[in-house]
Image 1: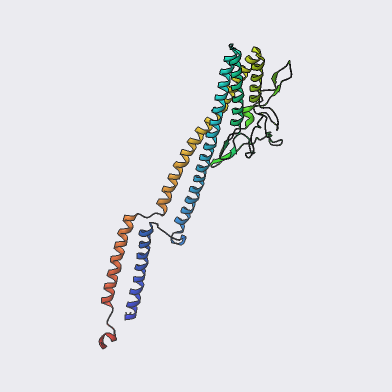
Image 2: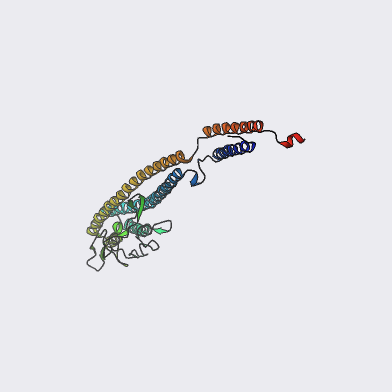
Length: 325
């Protein structure tokens, strides 16, 4: 077969273009650090990267959910500890009053009990990021009125029996209930103040359905205690002390429940963070180039390109124009 000058030129141009394409790709890899820029460069690797990025986004959302849930429960735990401290102080004052004190001391104790009752109402209306902690789905409303009665209804769904509980997704098919309803902490009761009977009935009612205007059991205890101090009735005082101790045990139980959930969430978050690290490592292995290797290939390809230009310039025969100069 006769090899013409045009054939040499065409072959050389074709080969040089191939070398330039490889050179351009290697320059992209070394400057950006990625193996491909469009899916058509490597469809299989691009598909894997898409899956890895989707999984990373999901897990990072689970981590955000976990952190938000922990923040909510930390505020709830703080509120419960404050309620426990209020009840503990009320118990101390009640025991002091029951052991016999003078009238002036009883008046001071009664005044402090009234202050503790007001503080208890404030804690019951605690919020997280502007949302009430103990009101279920009604986060825009307060749990208690200024007089201590309930400000909302808290009832189980008549059909499903479900309560107003927030559930956060913290994993694939993994949820956690983050809120505590006010009726599980404050209970429900009726306090009768008609003389000569002055007592709590229907309590403690923890977890019972409540309606707007109902009396919380904890508030009823403080009302009972105030009346006992007012009347200096030792029997009523002893009964109030027993009720306070029972209420403290319930608050401890609810606090322990929150603590267990927080421990679980901490473990879950650690697991999720490990998953993100693993997924990012897989993503990097799938699409990131080895820069030392890429620079070496780039240097080799540059030498090939220069050599091709040099050899091509020598083997292409001089044209007629070269002889006319």
